[in-house]
Image 1 (cartoon, rainbow, N blue to C red):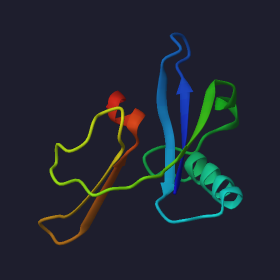
Image 2 (image 1 turned 30 degrees about the vertical axis):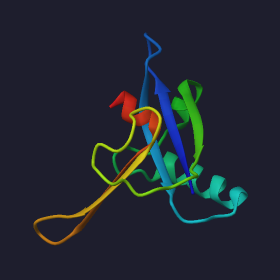
Image 3 (image 1 turned 90 degrees about the vertical axis):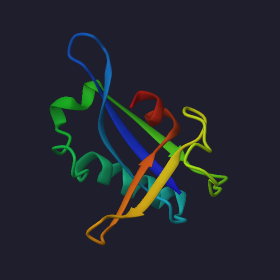
Length: 109
């Protein structure tokens, strides 16, 4: 399981803002996973326009390798900034909804 995250520096203040993040909880070969998810997170994150060539000098890319999964017994059974969290539920309309927060994302958000 891995996630690739792109962040962009602001033009003047250097603050980093999320620019793309896609990953998988499936077991993947590291080489192929890095290649596939680096490209997907840069170009196919539906929350953002694809990364452009002009943005490259301001981008930072990071990789999160996920290990040691455990079920939470309570919705408060995790520490912000220490643990990531994967949330899954069925909406009132019957569709499956999921969200993933890596440890550093939970702090930022």
